[in-house]
Length: 548
Image 1 (spheres, rainbow, N blue to C red):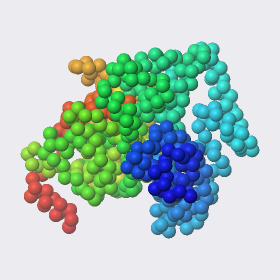
Image 2: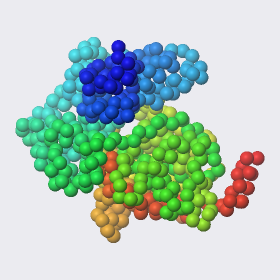
Image 3: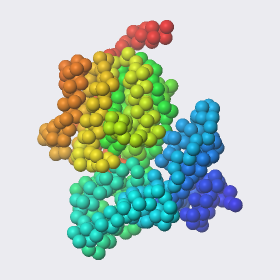
Image 4: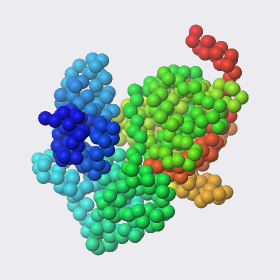
């Protein structure tokens, strides 16, 4: 059996299957292989994609094995083997519970087969399931879905697939949390559409679609289309892609990943609490990155003093370093774990030297959808119940007397994107009802904002704000009216909400950004204006009183 060093030195001599074997035996880990300092950069993107694809096939069985074994070692093996696994949050929770002796008995196996992990939109996956599980109680459902897909393909053969339909399909794949590898699924869908003999799309049509929206596809999909010869450097020039973005893509620069934090149960510091709400892919975490980067840059405020004891200290520190206003290309973060909520505490020192104690809370991307599921009586997973419990802990059961503000982040132009079959507005309207029912916005709330992200898609110039307001009125009027009612009931901000158009600058291939700080500066200025500032002596007295 080769050692770790031998694997690194001879990485090009092994097949993807052999590398997966080394990973599963614990000799090497995926992060170690992806570190170019270990392999000298010889671990190619093609090999990495093949290994990740094979690992995703093994993951359901290994997770079930961890559940059946139910030991600290079994869950740690799963975490080491699948650092980005779909059950990593639950694995950490079960591991900690076992270490604390809070799960004394072995849980019953939760699944009888791999049905929950089958991609219900993939014909090969469904056909493979039927072949592997002929006696499964889900066999009838699997066959029904197979026939449905075949019928749909028959229709496509007759009517063809136009670019608009393909774009909508791509967007829905990107929003579907059940798809384990969305980049691969999107790539396969595009390639099958290009190679369809009757009624497919052309490469020229794909190039035009990317020209119209350079964030249609992620950098990972674009890179694979380039590697496989569907796109060329000349095509990127025709699209008008900036050379700096192209360089990042060719170097296969990947988004940053964040560790899953400990569960947040309460806010522990005297401060103004600022909550950021938004469904997955709304741009919430990226907007926070821009806001924190500007707040710490010395342009609007003097500087930031970070609270290194807060639960999200590492997350906050990395967000603050994401963007520079110097024309360089930065890499946006990968979406955080859907069940993760981060607490980021800091003192914002304004230009007058006044101290504004702030705690920003980046609420889990699943939070709003969990509210909808709870109210509708839908079945909820352990992660979803835990996500909703975090909200109950910090804003109901352990609610502080701190003043509070709330930002709802809505992506401009995403009104027709579906999340588990429903549009964004359905979840937002359900969230308003949940908030009213449980009185989450009580008398200590000072302001509610709607931050409309990615407004670079809207017309430029003075018409942009008008386009943003019209977009909200057309697609989210019910949600806005619900928020206004809450403001009036709780005497928040004179019964009004404030609309904040927001852009990070120029974003390309979903993952790369040339940052422009003007929108972030306006948000930081609002935070300074809407939060109390203390001179140093008064701030010290305030802390002294709270410690007694």
